[in-house]
Length: 149
Image (tube, rainbow, N blue to C red; front, side, top):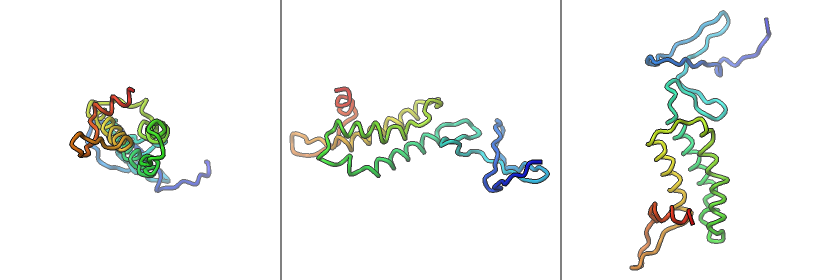
């Protein structure tokens, strides 16, 4: 028999079934393994329901965290909008879309991703001054026109 050093706190197993999740333990002669309903593997969350919603929420939070870390860059008046867009595309967007090739998206998840991207774009482009001297945030249509241009 092989001599292995295993960390009992880290060994868990995931059992996929359509039945309601009830935590159990898998017992062997030497160890006892805990059953979990989700775990993180290579940076992505895997769960019993094969639902991607939890993963997308975590990705959006990570993107917001990255934006907050680089907030001075995105709010600086010394950096042009084109450079800020390039920074967004290289620093934040890859964090949000990591492992997105495997996602099967529903309409509400697409909307959440679009909302988080537009929220950051609004901060990059800043407010718009109206004719009567007030400031307002840019609309989705205005942001799309700027991005296409």
